[in-house]
Length: 494
Image (tube, rainbow, N blue to C red; front, side, top):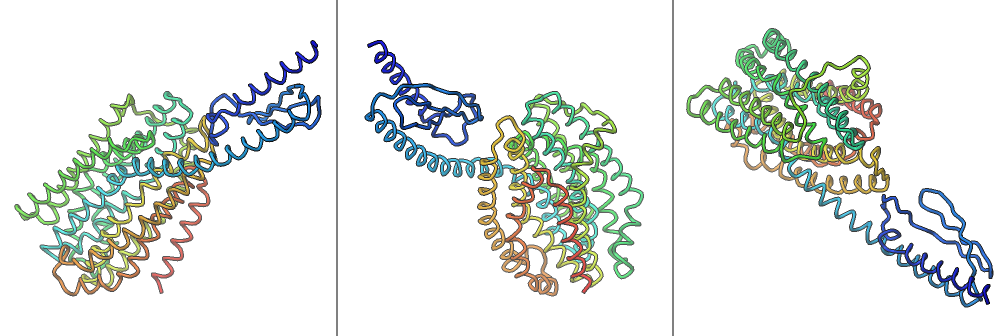
């Protein structure tokens, strides 16, 4: 009697444990990261058997139970089948729900982040449209001028990528002290690079422009030189603000930097209206308006970072070991960005050598390209901000990382088609926004189909590039980008 009572009690306890362990909050969630473990049972078809419970962490424990009679065996097997079927269907539902939730999260983050990337090319596009209405010569001067301002700014995007990557990784480890230290040393590097660029534009800008434009375009050098020297005054603020902006993005905050750049864009637009349209300062007025807006943006970026509890004025000189750590991330990224900047600059160089009409058309198309292509950059930034937590963080999940990449590629494909159509339509249907010169318009229309193709595939590329940066597969990125630059340069030489 005692033996039967013990056996019945053991069996009842086991069934209760089984039902509690099969609760949906544990078994139904394929991404569970709690300390609780889902339990999996292997039923042995014997009257006295061992039920092995294995947790997800691999720790095994032996549960001895008494299964009285063949009826208990069949009951257990039927219950196991039901649990397996329900768990499988719930997992599929949760995977689908998680995919759509990730798409929603990406849109909520990348939507405001899109504004960040649009503001800079929007400023240059405003300058192109305003100046092109007044003078084709000054429009042509913007070509080499933007190479030494906007393209050189792209060269320092390695600071932005390194900051986002290091901040997101430190945040995933939940180390606030280390996070502040990383920000401080990157702010020092940004300020140092900004001062060096200021000195370069003021003392070597005219010489570099003359060498770049060549003897056939001496007439555009004075206007381009004024443009570069005025905008060069903002270099320290630009790079210091770039680090502050990237730190906020690494913390998954895109609204603070967006507010700063919206205000800067308004300042830039009003400046162009007053200085160019009303006072007729031309390319010089456009340079002053853009420079002032960039300083305003940097100040607001710094204020946004301070509001998060981090000091944007705490600057630390990095140690040699820290310099090597930053160089390990920034070095390959610098090669990648240098390849992009060098290719865009090479295109402008060849266009400049072909005459005023062609370089003016190139200036319109390259600014339109820059305005459209940045819509894919938030996908790269999303990957860099969210992937480190899934790859290195406390709640590491490669399955979630794969799902995030899938979501980014899907959004990239849809976005690429949209911006390709819109980007091609503007210079095709509304070329008078930029210029009334028919010869310039004809040159613009010659490249519309290739322009559409290049815009369509870029957002998906950004998604993949951001994922590789988040995973710090930097060698592959630098080698692939330098190879693309070499092939592109050969095509230009043909």
